[in-house]
Length: 102
Image (tube, rainbow, N blue to C red; front, side, top):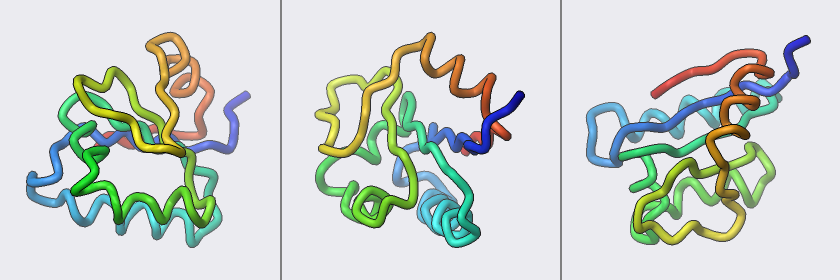
């Protein structure tokens, strides 16, 4: 049986078109009281860099979403963001109510 968690996978760099709107979409989901897990992967891990992470911090500070990082390359993971292994990511997606890739 699927869980109530919606997984949002962020796989694009902060400078990509539509990148800013991703956070707005996630905040909209949180306002609907959806249980969200945001997973940064590949180029999307650049959102974890200190100079661009500040807007994402509100998701942690207000407990709006669970933030995770998948295979971050040379990025220091901010506090409040959990590293996720391949098998954990697969299980999270399989058990999710839905998966949205951005």
